[in-house]
Image (cartoon, rainbow, N blue to C red; front, side, top):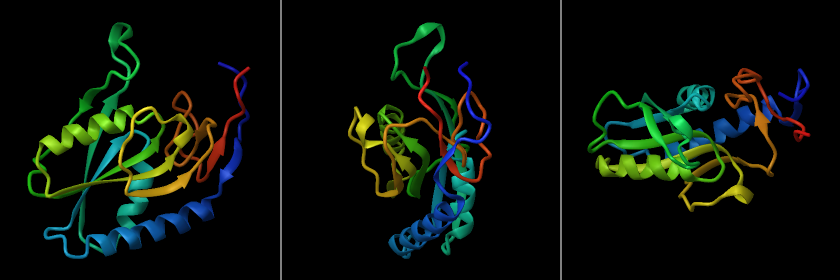
Length: 180
């Protein structure tokens, strides 16, 4: 593994993140004001857990939380873009208002898989909220109703995002230098 700094360069400060989470929560609450039964927030593990926790606490409308865990690369060298479920939702989403909460949307392959899989389960509505998106890397078009930040094509860590399971708990989003 290349040498990475112990404190990655701040790309998005803790203060900017918290302000944006509050803004997103107000927008989502407005859009779901009449949602019978509230919203089911579906966090995509591991990266979305911090964002989901802050968003859930900031939402002034009833909400519940569940999680999915996915693997983008299968065992024995499965092709890039191959997605499999590692942990599925605990209960049916049929007739519920579901908001997918994702840490980052890069190529779009994983999110496209999740959206298709959940649509088949017949929720009352299905929308997506991503903390960050990298449009320059998009290979698959996916609807994103709520976006925290649009970022350039750099490797980011912190606030749930990781590099080899490091840096997840940084309170900001930092950029790692390009690997040489």
